[in-house]
Image (cartoon, rainbow, N blue to C red; front, side, top):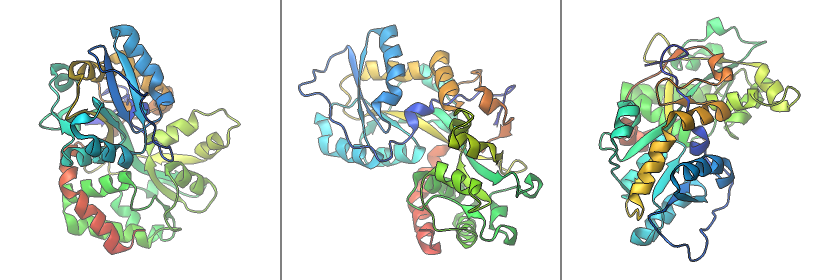
Length: 353
């Protein structure tokens, strides 16, 4: 699959899928009453960041949306501990790896929706309809414009070469984005090749892994490294800042390179949603997912978060459109789940901290 102005307009609904790193768990209002006129959402992002879209859904349907925001692991544990008494109807996550962990934990159920299956490409939804992608983000290569000739860049595998010794910044092994990317490598090319790649990246790191994706880009700008691996939407959000903002200045010194264009394509992942196992407001929850896949909702997040929508025909933000079209790896993300444990073990073996 290729993404660009004239192909599939991917306008991710990233605002719903980004992690709420560092956020404390919140608690629903005491004595909240379940009814057919509401839907209860557990989200990995702060409520203030997704509330405008939830309010738009309420205005259109009359269905109230109650949001609980917390860290990913905390919400999964909460769902498991609450069991049949859980008030949650819908789980919103930032990475397919989180959805797969929830699926393995037995806290989800299939979602029946003809709209979902007709709008979302098969690669970005569970074959049994247990989870569905709401938006797409690409994990690719970023480089210092003043120190790296993009003609020397090609594939993720090439980053393990001697030319990049001591030049790479990337997040730590516990990061779900890195785990999912490595799992995808195991799924497509086998464990041996994935381990060789991970070992090569460790050997070429400029520093110990630390910080988030934005921090990797800031490190490139600060000449701590020449190359970073990060999700595209972070770069887009930095480019959207005011001209005098420090992150805008950082972003303007960095270039984005679409990796693996002569091969399988750039790794992509999703922000997604899943119906909880004990949803009390199932019909309302499915309606909310369908709303989030509407052209109007996808456009809102394409413009505000600078990700790619899963729905065809939705315009990209001007910032993202300027990056140009690219070929995305279209392997079904459900395959990642089978190799997530192997990916973590590989990172441990090669010393990826």
